[in-house]
Structure formats: structure tokens, C-alpha cells
Amino acid sequence: MQISMIRRLALAIVLIVTVSACGDAAPSTSEAKVLGEQSSPEPDEAEGDTSDSDAPDSEDADEGADETSDNSVGAVDLAVGPISQDDVGALFAKTSAADSLLITASTATSQIMPVLGVSTVQELDLDRPTTTSIVTPEGTHTSIDLALLAPALLEHFEPGEVTIEMWQSGTEVVTDTSSYERIVALNPAADLGAFRPGVFSLNFAGHDDVSAEDMAKLVGADTVDLDKLSRDLPNALDNLEVASTNPTTITGTVMYSDLIAAHGNDPEVAARSAAAGVATATGLDPILLGDAYLSAYDSTQATVSLQISDDGYLEAVTSFADLSSVFESVIESGVFDDLGAQGILLKTAFTGGVLSIEIHSQFVVLDDLEMPIAPNPTEDRTDEFIKMMTDAGLIDG
Image 1 (cartoon, rainbow, N blue to C red):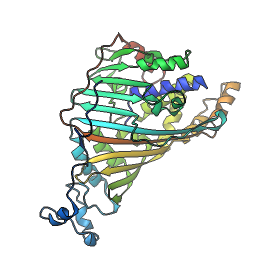
Image 2 (spheres, rainbow, N blue to C red; image 1 turned 90 degrees about the vertical axis):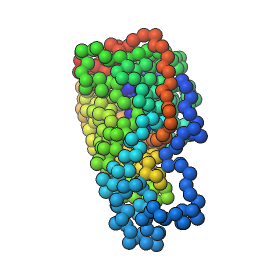
Image 3 (cartoon, helix red, strand yellow; image 1 turned 90 degrees about the horizontal axis):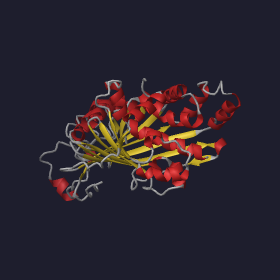
Image 4 (cartoon, rainbow, N blue to C red; image 1 turned 180 degrees about the vertical axis):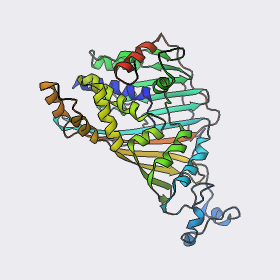
């Protein structure tokens, strides 16, 4: 479940439209090694094979609790109760070493804005991932189902009808927004900027006006950086405990901005990207709006659940954040103060808003996984994209 610079902008484009209006197939799981789904011994076999295990019997679990705190092999036999950040970090190591992964992320976004009559409540649907990424040493292919990512679009489109696909290799990103034709048909006046329908490339090599830091913001990883996640997330989590041992589930809390950072993204870029679409649709100052979003991210606590396989793999990460404070932060920012009657209307629209985001990411190791071939782009929109980011306050001009 990490959100890249380009993915966040794609969602911002959807917000512009909705506010204005109110491959190669991945291998089947039979060919994949699903983390934690290796065949397990039958109960009788498990009881009889204790030669390589120092794990205590269930009735001796309390006596052996200190022994299980090592966790050097995995999460087998972890006792319910507190667990250290170091032990959680150790559980990430095996997964982070994988070269090729299939990562799926399912998102449930609920948004209520009473004054505008907006009331969209989603629940996680693991059979319909919002994002599917194939990660290989050669590059990353990501497909995003915008109808599932932005619930308002489900009123007009079926899942899979509006997607954005990206092939990232080095500094080049080939992007296919052909299905955005449906958005244009829905709202012909929508300005999609660099993300208008088509197949185009973004290539930041040789652009002296874009710094290495800016390039990282623009190109950014399109999937979870497991190496970074394994280093940063355990250290950011508080109130860690093993909540269940069947399956092994570890829970904790983390500030939302720290959660974004642990997934390999810049919290400030995330906040300004989320605010960019709203700023464009409403005419509000994107800098003040982005500051308000970042303030809410810094003060919002998210809950995180980690599911660990018996073999010590990270199977899934689920996070939930109530970001309703975004609306209050925007109101308190003063962004409406100099807009007269329009500012009063917009301030009223933000009053009482509710926003929550739940994301479930699952990790699957695949043998000999290859990145799908990218289509040939018809044009280069790099300069246009950079200008779009500069105008939104996401990078320095």
C-alpha cells in the first residue's frame, strides 16, 4: 500500500474532475509462492517433529516467553503481549531480501462532507485491489484502478474502466492514461493537464533544472520500498504488541506522517499532492492548503497491523487513519480569509467533514518474475509535468 508522487497526482486529477462535476497478465497464485502459504505439516507431524525446535509447549508458554523474544527465525510461537521494535524489525528481514514481488494494495476511502451532500463510505475489498505492482530488478509496472481509489467515480464507472498504468525504469516513466477518455466524456471541461488521455513518457535524465531531490519526488518508488520499510517502520511504531498468534498478528500505532515516510515517501510531498487537486478545483492557495494538510498528517495517529507467516515472512500490512482533522486544519489555516463571499461558502463546505483511509497491502514472492513490456509512448510530457508540479507548489520552479 505506498503512494507514489505520480499516483498521488493521479488521484488529485480525479478530485479535480469529481469536484468540478458536483500488459502481460501476472502469474497466477498457483505459479507464485505466496508468503506464508507454504504447505504446513499436519498436526500429528508437527507434534512429532521437535528435533529442530526449542519452542515451548502451549502449557509452558508463560515459562518460555523470554525465549520467544529472540525471534531470529520468525514469528512462530510468539506469545501474546508486548514486543520490541528490534524483534519486529527482524521479522521484516526475510521479505525485504526478495528481488521480485507482486504487491497488491486495496484501499477503502470514506469521505463525508455534509454541506455538499457528499457521503461515500467504502469497505476493503481484497478481491479488487486498487493497485497492483510487479517489482523486478529491471523496473516496476503499476496499474491503478481509479474508480476504486476514488469512490466518487464508482457512481459513473465500473471497477477497471478508468485506470492508469505506469512502467518505471531508472529515470523514465511510461504512462498510459488512455482510459481517461471516459473522464473527459463525463466532464468535457475537466483540465487533466499532463494526464490527459494518451500514452506518454516522463524522462528526467539530463534536466539540469530538476535536482536529484526533485527527481526523487517526481519519479519516486511506485511500490513499497521493503528495505526502507523494514528499517523505518518498526522504529516508528509505538504500543507494539502481539495481538494474536493464529495467525501471528502484531499491532501498533504511528503518526500518519511517519507512516508515509516509512513507506519511502516524503510526507510534505504527500500532503501537497493531496492538496493540489483540491486547490485546482477550488482556487484556494495551494501552499496554504498543503501546509494545512501536512499539519493534519503530523498530528494524526494511525493504527497498523502486521500479519506474519509461520516462516517469518511479512504477509500483509494494514493501516487505518482517521484524517478528518484535515478539514479542521484547512479551516484554521486562514486560506479562506481573503476570498470574501466565496471563502465563506468554501469554509462552510469544509465544516464537519469526515475523511478516513484504510489500506491493506499483500506481498507475494514470485520466481523469475518479468516486468511487462511498456507500450511505445507517442509524446514526451516531461516539461509539462514539471511545470504542473511547480505550479502546484510541489517542487521549486
